[in-house]
View 1 (tube, rainbow, N blue to C red):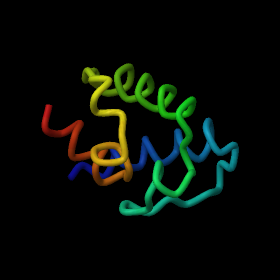
View 2: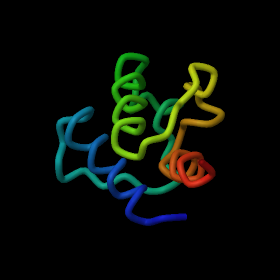
View 3: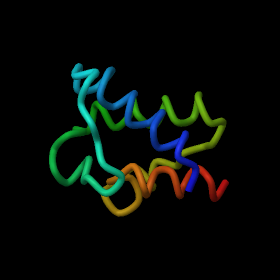
View 4: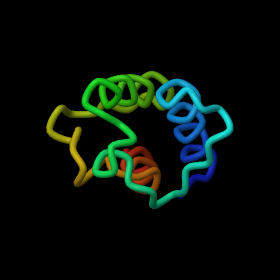
Length: 80
């Protein structure tokens, strides 16, 4: 897993979604299932990932099975 990918995503979530720039998010911390990210924020996160990393996120992937942690997101990005 590319550490810079997960750290960029963590920074975006903390700064833009949670509005808590100092917040630390661990690689396996649940984002969707814990309520950190809601359905509106999920779209923002998907757009950030598409724009930043140049990968296409399918609507069917926007769920807790594939989009619930920094680890899952990083794995998804690196697989493309």
